[in-house]
Image (cartoon, rainbow, N blue to C red):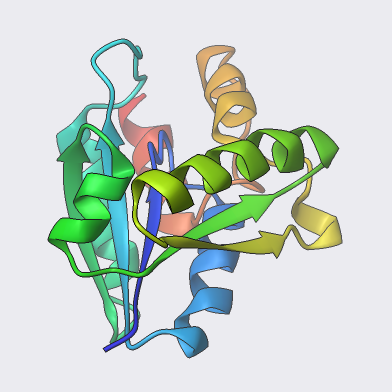
Amino acid sequence: MKVGIFPGSFDPITVGHIDLIERSLPLFDKVILAIGQNSQKKYLFSLEQRRAWLEDIAAMYENTEVDTYEGLTVNFAKEKNAGYLIRGLRNASDFDYEKTISQLNNIVGSGLETIFFIAQPGMSHISSTIVREIIKGKGDVSAFVPDQIYKDIKQNY
């Protein structure tokens, strides 16, 4: 079984994330949407909220599941018998950073491969970091997050 892991903080999940999920699904028997937890990072949304949103999204696709993990992504991949990581690249800075991480993951993860997807032209400007800043500033994020998440953000935040 070919298993790919799409790791991220998903704080919040964006339409860019959805695009990567949809583009990766035909390549794998299963795609695990994995929320990494980093104790050094301050999140806008709780792990429970991010997981609920991701499970909402995953329910739209047959071969996805949602999980959370702490520690190294390569260890989580081994635990899940996944041979691939799924990553998106928006620009050259993303590429430089992700290339290095990919090479290290390949060594530490005993051959763990990273599949890169280039952001669609209309999505290369979208990042969770920017979306969080717009939310904090009470701006409209409807163009950047899925409808069900936008409704929840608008109602609760």
